[in-house]
Image (tube, rainbow, N blue to C red):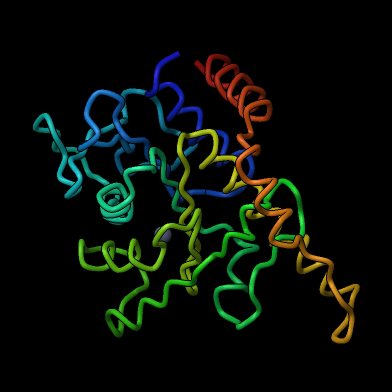
Length: 237
Ligand SMILES: [Zn+2]
């Protein structure tokens, strides 16, 4: 079991759960060097293998003379690793169910125990406050820094009209949170629909959030997802 194998599995798992599709990416901080991280070359997630992983410094320059095409939005990863020493894995996705919450004033609420971390607060990155007239992609270090500033100490941030960024102390948390954030957003929309405009939704209170978040490491799910993803890969050859 290596970190790179885990990273490849993370790509497959996120694609399988439709959190990322042809786009979106996941990275992990290097075990040996906290000032570098691993991210795939510019490639659809389901095609990523160990050979496609590039090591970057925290300015998101490829190391070891690697000249393969990197993701345009790699700055999301590097700039977050710079300011969040606690973060060891970053997911950037275009997770569909979170989009409505990035373009309205309706906040995401902690309504589902698998996504209790929502109760820590999910800020919304408004790229227009940093630069007007962009294509919404985080293409520069400046935009990456601004996103990292919006994320601050939180586990995730929405990116208005684009998707979200989700972080964790390890890959299993970043991946688990991404999958359950998508699910939680969908469940909240369903709860809002059946509750109607006057209905109340029973979200977690602060004590429940505090009790839930540290325990939620997604370990059991991660082991299952990882085993299935690596088996599928071996079958595909
Ligand atoms: Zn993106």
